[in-house]
Length: 205
Image (cartoon, rainbow, N blue to C red; front, side, top):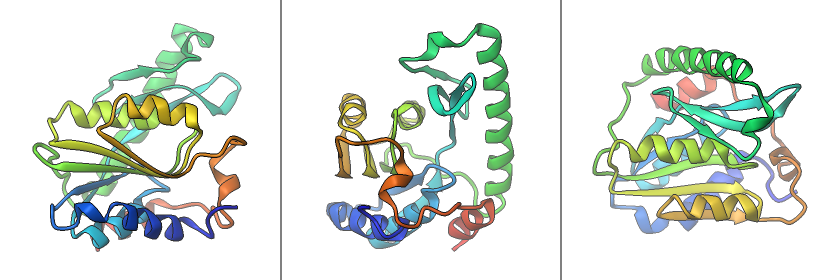
């Protein structure tokens, strides 16, 4: 285990990102797990907090495996395993995940309206990254709204995913890049579920 919990990872990431304190960054958490982390980082850097809504597209019969991702506008990012699913399966999966994104946006906007990233230093936060599909989708989604800079911050990720992220982001901050990566949760002593209520509370603070 590398982290006691997400809070420890967030505190350590905030230390690594201290250069952005005073530059009023926009810190975007990937719901749900990373939003309380993003709150800690935004507070430490004296920045703003919001969410970036993307969802991974699950492989047929293997829900933990991503074949791609979809963002809030409906743009689909194809992963390396995208072709293992039929067009009909992908279309249904996109519909399902876009509905969830819409429901979450409606819920989270009650806490605060969405923040425009245009011209801002944007820090995208996730607790950990496996295939990288969701974070790549998040990068593309934010890029389309013309930020000044895109920084990815995560606790743990395999080196193969980090290479793909570094090709798309302006900067990638990752605390650990282990060779024996199987799942994000293996690197946290406490990896308990983050609920929608916890996300709303983080956004409302």
